[in-house]
Image 1 (cartoon, rainbow, N blue to C red):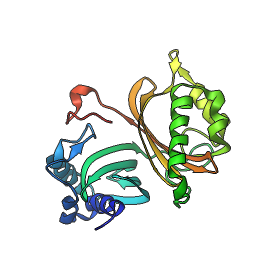
Image 2 (cartoon, rainbow, N blue to C red):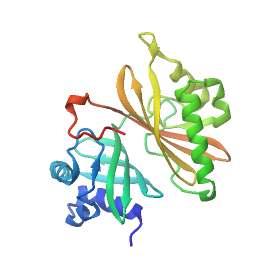
Image 3 (cartoon, rainbow, N blue to C red):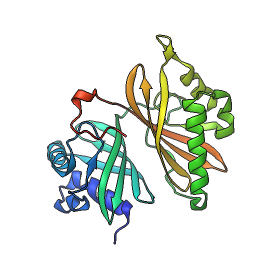
Image 4 (cartoon, rainbow, N blue to C red):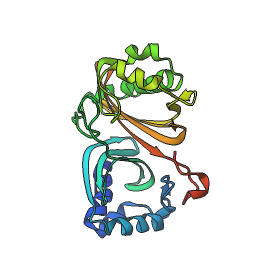
Length: 252
């Protein structure tokens, strides 16, 4: 049986290749869609693939991970415009049964010259997966959501490598960005951590929040080393108003 990483890649690469076997990865009777802009189940997926096929699509995998029943990926898409994506699938019996994503138009390099997808890709420290998961969870809950910024050095390397397109490397730059206000409220607010996925030295945190007053998904991928977060990637995706959703499952 193929690994869940292989199944994820086959499914998403089918957007580019048009491989009819890609759809066989999905359990049509169980498939739950959490992208609010995509219709429910396999009909919604088929409509999405058909629409994207007209854009001469390109799918490039930068990082692919597996965690229990989940596989998740950090991708670049070119659907007539380049986007950065986190894709998350839950599997049962070798079939995809649930899907989440967070996609952002690619941005220019950040003030430190780093791009949204470059950086380390090697998965190591598999024996530290659970410790790293809990470290990332604590950082998001205690620092980002509760806004205890004085605790940053407990979790972050001082010279944090930053791939957020608007923030430079280091703790100081991150804190300055999180301290910014707009209309008397934080410009970036992390409000609820929905899920933490992990494999070895990488963890993906699926976070709900707001940016500049807009309801958004804030996905953060962290790389950890020796008990510290040393590298960070992210995407920020607006969540459409409830009346515009094409399914009833919610973003998270």
